[in-house]
Image 1: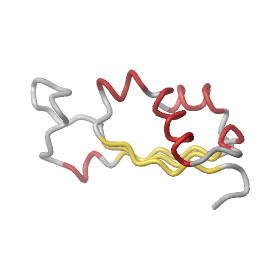
Image 2 (image 1 turned 30 degrees about the horizontal axis):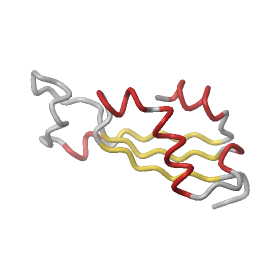
Image 3 (image 1 turned 60 degrees about the horizontal axis):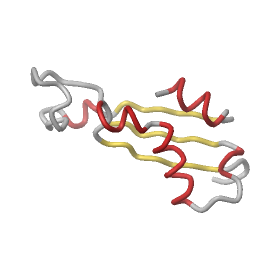
Length: 88
Protein backbone atom coordinates (compact mmCIF):
# COMPACT_ATOMS: atom_id res chain seq x y z
CA UNK A 1 0.00 0.00 0.00
CA UNK A 2 2.77 2.43 0.92
CA UNK A 3 4.58 1.97 -2.40
CA UNK A 4 1.39 2.45 -4.43
CA UNK A 5 0.43 5.62 -2.56
CA UNK A 6 3.98 7.01 -2.77
CA UNK A 7 4.16 6.39 -6.51
CA UNK A 8 0.65 7.64 -7.26
CA UNK A 9 0.54 10.76 -5.09
CA UNK A 10 4.11 11.78 -4.17
CA UNK A 11 2.87 12.76 -0.71
CA UNK A 12 4.68 15.11 1.63
CA UNK A 13 3.16 13.15 4.52
CA UNK A 14 2.07 9.51 4.56
CA UNK A 15 1.06 7.72 7.75
CA UNK A 16 -0.32 4.19 7.62
CA UNK A 17 -1.53 2.63 10.85
CA UNK A 18 -2.48 -1.03 10.93
CA UNK A 19 -5.52 -1.27 13.21
CA UNK A 20 -6.24 -4.93 12.48
CA UNK A 21 -5.46 -5.98 16.06
CA UNK A 22 -8.34 -3.79 17.24
CA UNK A 23 -10.67 -6.03 15.26
CA UNK A 24 -9.48 -9.42 16.51
CA UNK A 25 -12.05 -12.09 15.78
CA UNK A 26 -13.78 -9.89 13.22
CA UNK A 27 -14.15 -11.71 9.93
CA UNK A 28 -12.09 -10.03 7.23
CA UNK A 29 -14.77 -10.86 4.66
CA UNK A 30 -13.16 -14.18 3.76
CA UNK A 31 -9.84 -12.66 2.77
CA UNK A 32 -8.14 -15.66 4.32
CA UNK A 33 -9.98 -18.94 3.88
CA UNK A 34 -8.02 -20.47 6.76
CA UNK A 35 -9.51 -17.98 9.23
CA UNK A 36 -6.12 -16.70 10.34
CA UNK A 37 -5.80 -13.07 11.34
CA UNK A 38 -4.83 -10.76 8.50
CA UNK A 39 -3.75 -7.16 8.23
CA UNK A 40 -6.95 -5.72 6.82
CA UNK A 41 -7.95 -2.60 8.80
CA UNK A 42 -5.97 0.58 8.19
CA UNK A 43 -6.03 4.27 9.12
CA UNK A 44 -4.21 6.41 6.55
CA UNK A 45 -3.25 10.09 6.62
CA UNK A 46 -1.98 11.57 3.37
CA UNK A 47 -0.89 15.11 2.60
CA UNK A 48 -0.27 15.65 -1.10
CA UNK A 49 -0.30 18.51 -3.57
CA UNK A 50 -2.42 16.26 -5.81
CA UNK A 51 -5.37 16.97 -3.47
CA UNK A 52 -5.19 20.76 -3.82
CA UNK A 53 -8.47 22.19 -5.09
CA UNK A 54 -10.28 18.85 -4.86
CA UNK A 55 -13.34 18.17 -2.76
CA UNK A 56 -13.15 15.34 -0.21
CA UNK A 57 -15.08 12.89 -2.40
CA UNK A 58 -12.70 13.43 -5.33
CA UNK A 59 -9.73 12.84 -3.01
CA UNK A 60 -11.23 9.59 -1.74
CA UNK A 61 -11.97 8.42 -5.26
CA UNK A 62 -8.36 9.12 -6.24
CA UNK A 63 -7.01 6.99 -3.38
CA UNK A 64 -9.59 4.24 -3.94
CA UNK A 65 -8.58 4.06 -7.62
CA UNK A 66 -4.92 3.66 -6.64
CA UNK A 67 -5.76 0.92 -4.12
CA UNK A 68 -8.46 -0.76 -6.23
CA UNK A 69 -6.80 -4.17 -6.34
CA UNK A 70 -5.99 -4.25 -2.62
CA UNK A 71 -9.49 -3.05 -1.72
CA UNK A 72 -10.93 -5.99 -3.66
CA UNK A 73 -8.72 -8.60 -2.02
CA UNK A 74 -6.81 -7.51 1.09
CA UNK A 75 -8.22 -4.36 2.67
CA UNK A 76 -11.45 -4.76 4.63
CA UNK A 77 -11.60 -1.31 6.26
CA UNK A 78 -9.81 1.89 5.29
CA UNK A 79 -10.09 5.17 7.18
CA UNK A 80 -8.72 8.12 5.21
CA UNK A 81 -7.69 11.64 6.18
CA UNK A 82 -6.65 13.36 2.96
CA UNK A 83 -5.09 16.81 3.04
CA UNK A 84 -3.58 19.30 0.62
CA UNK A 85 -0.44 21.09 1.84
CA UNK A 86 -1.32 23.69 4.46
CA UNK A 87 -4.54 21.98 5.55
CA UNK A 88 -4.95 20.42 8.97
